[in-house]
Length: 300
Image (cartoon, rainbow, N blue to C red; front, side, top):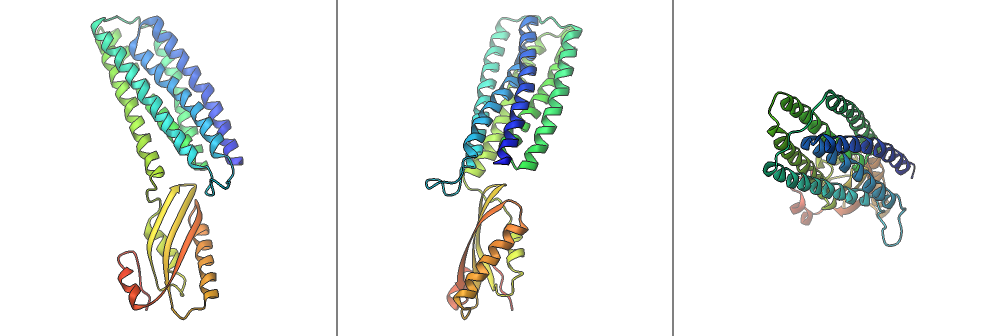
């Protein structure tokens, strides 16, 4: 619960910064008729909207385990990142729509020194937000913070592109403003695809850990003859491990039960993020030899 409280406070703080940046860009972009700056402001506004989705996701993920959710609710945080991706796609679509209208009804933006000052200040703020959020995302193993930092990183790149566009407008190439707005929309959509890729891997139970890493820990126990059918799934802060362990057929059931607990304990202690381990004990026999493929190892 302490972890989710920390994430919640971080999201609220970043929300304030994101919307300060967003409204500054949007208002100034509309006043000066600068499409690329307005598009960048919409991107920043999406950052703030994603923070709100993150707050909802964290609220759901912080609920304790119950009868209907014996594994907890942590994946709600991952599900919330899909909402961030949706906002990015929606923002990209709206920007592309407006840029197509801009080609048919061209407008020459009014670029002043204030334009460059505003973009410089917002870039500095976004760099601070991105680094802070990325660092906290790693420390707290938070999908929301990590994906949101990726979103903000895209915003920084877009802002640098806008600065270049402002320079080109001052040099007499105003048509680049509409073109750059389109490129920003593509960059926004690319960030959304990356978030979808990361989130879907977790939600579809993609392997989280290397099988070799698990085998290196389990095979240290002399009672273990082989390991196979290793599976891992979940988030980096909530990893579930399933594995089959082959032992001497003469081992007493009490000793085998004790061994399974030792395996569980060692995996949790040796690999950060492992919260659940299911060990299937099998007796060593001729019939089990067919199971020992590349994922197993016999001891002499």
